[in-house]
Length: 284
Image 1: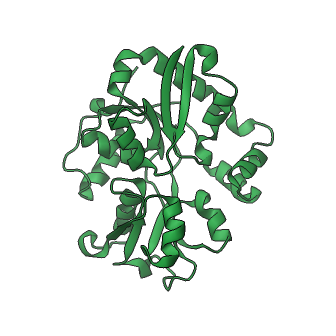
Image 2: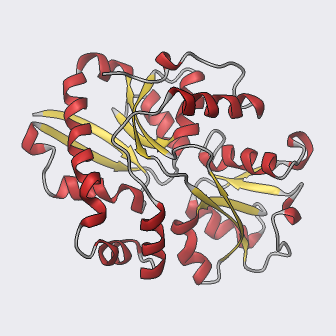
């Protein structure tokens, strides 16, 4: 039995992994796969990959591409979710800000530098034609819990996080959502450390094949909307909308998509160079 550790955010996107683990899909094929939740998101997982605390991660595309270019010794082996991630732009319920334009020059609460919430603040600023140097400021709040407690106290002025994950807190009146900002590329990829790819490529293939079998049938599972609603404490209507918008993938990222990610990161000065696709994408 081969042992592997995989990291991911504890969100509804990753429910297929939970089901596959519950069904012992990996164990049946000789893989002891341990899932580790990373509440701090992309930045925390990048660090875990670098420190060899995990072998692989289900991670935001732009976050891992940037970190690979900056020295993370890993590669993308597959797109996991090919639809865009819809980032909600949130303020505290009692905030004086009521539109995205009101947020120009205020502080974005981010989980950490290099995280998805950090990188997408740049994408949003660019979409709004803001001056990156003067109109974008940051306050580190660690994770979603940090934003829930910090934003109402003035620790940051707005917070970007996946729209459906934060919807219950909008319904509860902790956050107000003033807008959305979708990613201009497939949102989640699976990344694997290069030393694992070199030594255990067949096992990685088995893991990918097993999760792909799960995602192919995921939407047709009876009452999957009810299961998701209960597990993630979401309204059934929100879950059904999310399911209609979300598409899983069983293929790797295209070179053209990677080029778009790198171009945007370079344009925003989040990387200082581009890298050849074969150094970022693993081909089996």
